[in-house]
Length: 148
Image (tube, rainbow, N blue to C red; front, side, top):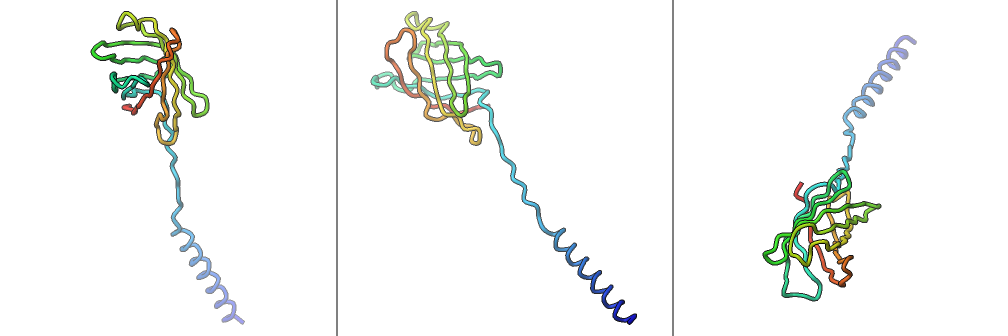
Protein backbone atom coordinates (compact mmCIF):
# COMPACT_ATOMS: atom_id res chain seq x y z
CA UNK A 1 0.00 0.00 0.00
CA UNK A 2 2.83 2.31 0.88
CA UNK A 3 4.49 1.66 -2.48
CA UNK A 4 1.31 2.51 -4.34
CA UNK A 5 0.97 5.80 -2.45
CA UNK A 6 4.65 6.60 -3.07
CA UNK A 7 4.30 5.87 -6.80
CA UNK A 8 1.08 7.88 -7.03
CA UNK A 9 2.65 10.84 -5.23
CA UNK A 10 5.74 10.67 -7.46
CA UNK A 11 3.57 10.45 -10.58
CA UNK A 12 1.49 13.43 -9.40
CA UNK A 13 4.60 15.54 -8.73
CA UNK A 14 6.14 14.65 -12.12
CA UNK A 15 2.85 15.52 -13.87
CA UNK A 16 2.60 18.89 -12.12
CA UNK A 17 6.24 19.75 -12.85
CA UNK A 18 5.89 18.74 -16.51
CA UNK A 19 2.72 20.80 -16.94
CA UNK A 20 4.41 23.78 -15.29
CA UNK A 21 7.44 23.40 -17.51
CA UNK A 22 5.41 23.46 -20.71
CA UNK A 23 3.16 26.31 -19.63
CA UNK A 24 6.11 28.46 -18.59
CA UNK A 25 7.82 27.89 -21.93
CA UNK A 26 4.87 29.18 -23.90
CA UNK A 27 5.76 32.60 -25.27
CA UNK A 28 3.10 35.24 -24.80
CA UNK A 29 2.40 37.04 -28.02
CA UNK A 30 2.09 40.75 -27.49
CA UNK A 31 0.90 42.98 -30.27
CA UNK A 32 1.85 46.60 -30.11
CA UNK A 33 -0.27 48.92 -32.18
CA UNK A 34 1.31 52.24 -33.06
CA UNK A 35 -1.09 55.14 -33.33
CA UNK A 36 0.08 58.26 -35.12
CA UNK A 37 -1.11 61.83 -34.60
CA UNK A 38 -1.89 64.22 -37.43
CA UNK A 39 -0.05 67.02 -35.62
CA UNK A 40 3.38 67.82 -37.00
CA UNK A 41 5.21 69.01 -40.09
CA UNK A 42 4.04 67.78 -43.50
CA UNK A 43 5.89 68.59 -46.72
CA UNK A 44 5.06 67.96 -50.34
CA UNK A 45 3.57 69.58 -53.40
CA UNK A 46 0.36 71.02 -54.79
CA UNK A 47 -0.90 71.43 -58.32
CA UNK A 48 -3.69 73.39 -59.97
CA UNK A 49 -6.20 71.22 -61.81
CA UNK A 50 -6.47 72.18 -65.46
CA UNK A 51 -3.30 74.27 -65.47
CA UNK A 52 -0.38 71.98 -66.32
CA UNK A 53 1.88 75.00 -66.86
CA UNK A 54 2.04 75.60 -63.12
CA UNK A 55 3.27 72.07 -62.43
CA UNK A 56 3.94 70.84 -58.92
CA UNK A 57 4.73 73.63 -56.49
CA UNK A 58 6.13 73.20 -52.94
CA UNK A 59 3.63 72.98 -50.08
CA UNK A 60 4.46 72.83 -46.36
CA UNK A 61 1.74 72.28 -43.77
CA UNK A 62 2.35 72.61 -40.03
CA UNK A 63 -0.52 71.08 -38.04
CA UNK A 64 -0.41 72.32 -34.45
CA UNK A 65 -1.91 70.73 -31.34
CA UNK A 66 -3.86 73.90 -30.55
CA UNK A 67 -6.03 73.41 -33.68
CA UNK A 68 -4.16 75.87 -35.87
CA UNK A 69 -2.27 75.36 -39.13
CA UNK A 70 0.46 77.24 -40.90
CA UNK A 71 0.82 76.85 -44.67
CA UNK A 72 3.93 77.83 -46.63
CA UNK A 73 3.88 77.59 -50.42
CA UNK A 74 5.37 79.03 -53.54
CA UNK A 75 3.50 80.11 -56.60
CA UNK A 76 6.31 79.96 -59.13
CA UNK A 77 9.00 82.07 -57.37
CA UNK A 78 6.59 83.91 -55.03
CA UNK A 79 6.74 82.75 -51.40
CA UNK A 80 3.31 82.65 -49.70
CA UNK A 81 2.19 82.13 -46.09
CA UNK A 82 -1.26 81.32 -44.75
CA UNK A 83 -2.66 80.52 -41.34
CA UNK A 84 -5.88 78.88 -40.27
CA UNK A 85 -7.50 76.03 -38.36
CA UNK A 86 -7.93 72.27 -38.72
CA UNK A 87 -10.25 69.48 -37.56
CA UNK A 88 -10.10 65.69 -37.62
CA UNK A 89 -13.44 63.90 -37.65
CA UNK A 90 -12.95 60.15 -37.80
CA UNK A 91 -10.34 59.83 -40.54
CA UNK A 92 -11.38 63.03 -42.36
CA UNK A 93 -8.82 65.82 -41.98
CA UNK A 94 -9.98 69.32 -42.97
CA UNK A 95 -8.23 72.66 -42.73
CA UNK A 96 -9.13 76.16 -43.82
CA UNK A 97 -6.47 78.84 -44.13
CA UNK A 98 -6.16 82.49 -45.18
CA UNK A 99 -3.12 83.75 -47.09
CA UNK A 100 -1.52 86.59 -45.14
CA UNK A 101 1.67 87.03 -47.14
CA UNK A 102 2.53 86.63 -50.80
CA UNK A 103 1.48 87.81 -54.21
CA UNK A 104 -0.95 90.70 -54.06
CA UNK A 105 -3.75 88.79 -55.76
CA UNK A 106 -3.50 85.84 -53.37
CA UNK A 107 -3.28 87.80 -50.11
CA UNK A 108 -6.56 87.28 -48.21
CA UNK A 109 -7.44 84.29 -50.39
CA UNK A 110 -9.09 81.58 -48.29
CA UNK A 111 -8.52 77.95 -49.22
CA UNK A 112 -9.75 74.70 -47.78
CA UNK A 113 -7.94 71.37 -47.91
CA UNK A 114 -9.20 67.87 -47.12
CA UNK A 115 -7.49 64.51 -46.82
CA UNK A 116 -7.93 61.06 -45.37
CA UNK A 117 -5.74 60.50 -42.31
CA UNK A 118 -4.65 57.00 -41.30
CA UNK A 119 -3.86 56.75 -37.58
CA UNK A 120 -2.28 53.34 -38.10
CA UNK A 121 -0.01 54.40 -40.99
CA UNK A 122 0.45 58.09 -40.14
CA UNK A 123 -0.40 59.20 -43.68
CA UNK A 124 -2.57 61.81 -45.37
CA UNK A 125 -3.99 60.52 -48.66
CA UNK A 126 -6.50 61.70 -51.26
CA UNK A 127 -5.61 65.29 -50.36
CA UNK A 128 -7.19 68.13 -52.31
CA UNK A 129 -7.49 71.90 -51.99
CA UNK A 130 -10.02 74.43 -53.26
CA UNK A 131 -10.34 78.24 -53.31
CA UNK A 132 -13.18 79.22 -50.97
CA UNK A 133 -12.97 83.00 -51.22
CA UNK A 134 -12.82 84.25 -53.86
CA UNK A 135 -14.71 81.27 -55.22
CA UNK A 136 -12.74 81.05 -58.46
CA UNK A 137 -13.25 77.32 -58.90
CA UNK A 138 -9.51 76.77 -58.70
CA UNK A 139 -8.62 73.49 -57.04
CA UNK A 140 -6.06 70.77 -57.20
CA UNK A 141 -4.27 67.93 -55.50
CA UNK A 142 -1.86 67.85 -52.58
CA UNK A 143 0.79 65.21 -51.98
CA UNK A 144 2.03 65.31 -48.37
CA UNK A 145 4.55 63.32 -46.34
CA UNK A 146 5.00 63.70 -42.61
CA UNK A 147 8.45 64.90 -41.57
CA UNK A 148 7.90 64.81 -37.80
